[in-house]
Length: 234
Length: 353
Image 1 (spheres, each protein chain N blue to C red):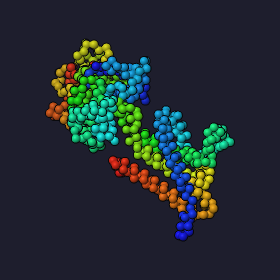
Image 2 (image 1 turned 180 degrees about the vertical axis):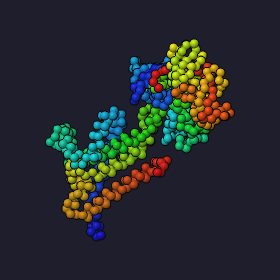
Image 3 (image 1 turned 135 degrees about the vertical axis):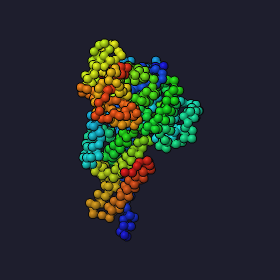
Image 4 (image 1 turned 45 degrees about the vertical axis):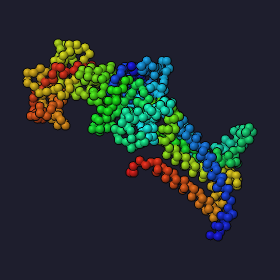
């Protein structure tokens, strides 16, 4: 017990802030990109749709290290894109916080995209037709008809995206590395302290992740429940 | 005012090929489910696009594939009543009606219109309710009200009563009929229910596997259908192949009958039809009498249905009698039944059914 208090007192809290910041930024990015992509893919023809959907879903089913490999292939300073970004805009993705965001966004994106698409596809098309024949503009239909209908699905997609981005490990460690105070996220810190045999510190961080993740999922359920008043139990 | 439609569209399994003109009043599109009725309405409303053709409403071109005109739905001034009403579930009654006034920019005018519409459709007091808190009849009134709010020039009704039980249906049908009678534009009703069409529309266009037949008066469709398909969709239970044998008679091999008929010209005749309730018991020497074996007697709600096999026939006839007349006829009996001359409808074939 005393040991725990000692550890908490001397604990470097930077991984928590880095993870939260990364999660938030990645979620905002994925939110807009995911909704936009979902609408774009929905409008595609069958065959190209299957192909594009497959590519967009890959990061979710691949081992994150494989995604990390591809990200390195793109953003490495010894590669054209990485070199160009650094030379022209002084943007460095590898070994930087930006790398954390890119890695977390890529891995979490499919969650947002798939949830948003599923929610949009559930919207009763007659409601949209009704909006159109009634003279509503497409923008108005999207905000007043589609989003309220698809709201719960989009919201749960957003929450899952945040949870996933918060805990990302594999791709992040490859692309952004584990630089304390800069790119050292909670999951990377856990891996590191375990390698050093420090199970107590690891336990503290595990508890932190557990609490946050559970709170997120719990919140999501409460939220979904209040939205789905009229759903019958079966 | 008239709505002219002449469109083609390739669909799964068949081609929609519809051409008709509907004037003011109610015109029905009658066809079996899957015959392309709803798709036709959607093309007119502009939420689906035909492959080619032309749609003109009161001189205004809504769609013309040659001139590359395709007005968006919101500029067509065409109202659409959806089968399940498609009320916006997240909006109150007032907001739903307001959605129909999207094109009205002036807020004061919009408010005034909303108020008068609520009154006209007896929806006062329900303004702040959500659709899920309304009864079926109230939902329909809100949908009608919302549709008419934008003052459309044509209104399209897509099987508005299909989902209702028969008691409520009658009541709602009456309300819609009243609303339609006050509407000065073109009304198009899609239905697969011949009774509904008979009660509600003055003119009717039969749709058969995507292809439209000429528009006729509704009463004519039921009294003198011209094609086998019209006869079937108008509810004729007895239809069979026939050959015109001259001198005002037709031969019907499947019934093994030679029937006297009223028409002298039988060039295009491929079938005959006789409605079940016109086939009545008769004396052996009556015109068009046939000695029939009664195969089956089935009680319906208010009538009795007899399945009759004329001597030497391969296909049975169906006769529908009131219970009083049908008394005494039992399965297994033989008796004479007449297919009266004026009830023999000569039919052509409009293509595959």
